[in-house]
Length: 372
Image (cartoon, rainbow, N blue to C red):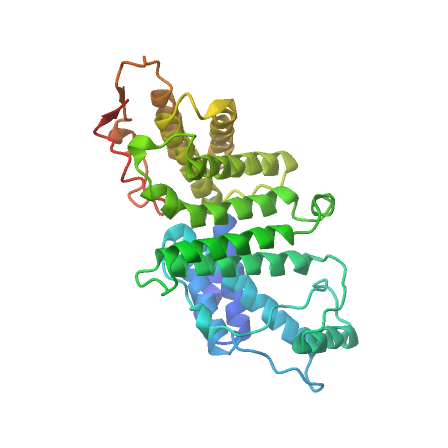
């Protein structure tokens, strides 16, 4: 009821001001996390509307830092823009769609690292002035620390998309780009606050950060994995091993988030889990003897978490059923001399037509053929 009223008010509001961008973002977040809502704009549409409203009022451009400003309002503007940016990038990667604004049009500074409840104008202005001249003032870890850290990851993911997935990719040679981007990802993960701090009350949790890292690393590694000859793929191949480890890490992280009580029941969680489980099932199918018990345990963790999502969200039930059927087919007994058939493509029929919107390419999984 309240969401419906908010949408009605939004349709009457004046487009292109700060309040409109904020309202669109709040509606997008609700739509993203709601287990069910009435028909209307999707989270992708609402996030795009929020970004366009933010761009219209110039929130994407660099702020001038001077004494005649309200530093609190200026910081709130930055927080709003980067929150919209983070969701826009996440949805773009998940849905395989263009971003609402290209990286080269953004030059606004990141928010200063301070609690969002801080309204001390003098302290905020001090941090803003230090940021302007590149001076680092030590601050405590705050809620804003994690927004800043996540935005930096989204920026790296955008570079991955531009280098490896764009229709007109960047001119940087792919092997060189992969090495540079992998180094940036690893450096980002090293800069994560200590696990003891991340897991303290009120913090996002280490598993949330690790999940984001594995998902970004998989985004980077997928083209290399897809380029390998599937008939020769096994655990002796380094890319194969790392790919298995990343997808297993995603399944473990979701299980840990559920145990911690911080799991978000969203389409992004469903898609990420299902694609990770599908990747692990494919690797198990390729090298049933080599993947080991840990991978089998990760597949079971994926099944468990899909079951958790299905209990709370009816849309997830088809995905759970398809995955269970897929795993059962792959685990059917076979002999070394017997050809092992691929799963029947019809098992995917219960899924929506656009279910597969991830960056992975499973066209090489020839579902009409048999391999060893």
